[in-house]
Image 1: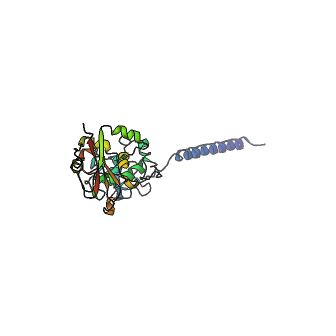
Image 2: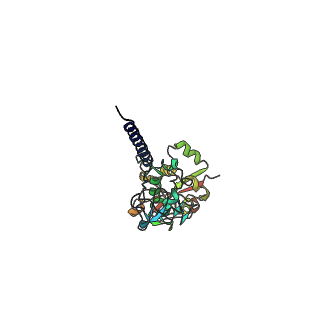
Image 3: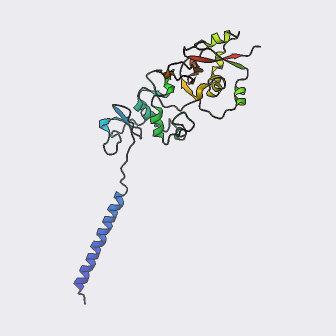
Length: 276
């Protein structure tokens, strides 16, 4: 028969086991929620890096384990950015500014195609969109071979990308307007004078559309954004290769368009009113 002291010792041992197990369980429960955050980062710059949470830092300030910026200040910084044009003079700050969900709509960004072909996929995350759009693209250059300005890292969504427009819809848009294609290097003033008409500069916004250019020009399956007073226009076939021979060009800045604009390697699409 067990003595009272043995029973007491046994119960005391059970109590110790219970307390130890509870404490160990509590420790395991707490540590299960300690998750390390890992950041995706830009890789383009030589000095600065932007992580996917919107912080910018130099390489020495990057956490070696998480790859996140250790200094948490100025999230979504737009330093060196023009918020009207949505263009910046620095790639890293362009990405940071773009990552602000109040500035860039995630659902819209993830519907943008990565490249021009219809078979191209779309961006999977906001970071992918910002990192991709902020790189140099056709919309930040003049005639595809020179930067428009130092603010050539732009994150605005591409414009002029509507699809499915019909010929009848085009005709409705062009009611009261006639269109003529000029010769290489000609201004719209010169083109219209050859048929006894005058260029109507106020109508450029209506024909500055890929669908309309493709109705009158070959465009070789390509319609690119550019900036120049000679647009909308088609690049001639014998143009230098870096000017995208055969491509059609529209502008994202219609205010620059004019009847007297011309370029030695383009043929303009010119609007004039029907004679009354």
